Image 1 (cartoon, rainbow, N blue to C red):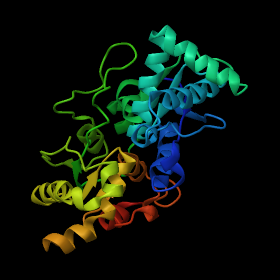
Image 2 (image 1 turned 90 degrees about the vertical axis):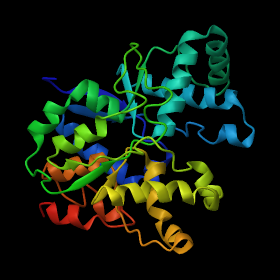
Image 3 (image 1 turned 135 degrees about the vertical axis):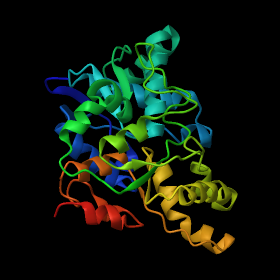
Length: 303
């Protein structure tokens, strides 16, 4: 990619709360890699929780249609988001509007009732990791590295949503496999760190269930932490804001229940890149926002 490419960015709700460090590090590193980031104006929630409270598919369709209609006003063909749930909802509903006349008309009627322009499904929706893999490429990441993270061992935890079940891109391709994705390891190694062999890389942490009934999911997170510890990881890297929050927030509860002593930092790949690019550890990498401080990574950062 030789010149800057404009992408419309959907930050999602977590960007203003528990995932602020993902949002801030994304905004910092993407322009360094030739991706010009322009926000959707007046965006709303993607409806990630609507289905769980009895809202059904229609509210989700409408919420995403409104976001995409506003995204189209930016004039960019491509939209991306860093949140796994936002990606699944936005991508799925974009395809539904594009390929299903009945759903397209339903969305148009709802938008019209709210004084909005209809949306025809003609944008392309991507996950931030897909943008890094398919539009930027690891060679570009390596070229930008000025502060290699030599000696840092990273467990790449993809989680259960980022490549499943909608890893297929708009053009019918894939940016990674369902069974054994390697994009996180590739990013880690491009930053000069060591990607350790992490077997549960696509395991679930319990997702939203952990928020409502953490006692039902602590065993899932315990396994993730155990395997990272066995692999000798200094940090766990994940692209999902809910995964990151859960695995950091519940380590104390896991230690109390199981008699363990976990204190493993969980970071985003964008934070690794920001440090490897020699950027500011607070303003750009947002390392101060991690609940469990990634001390080894912080020491590597150029002040």
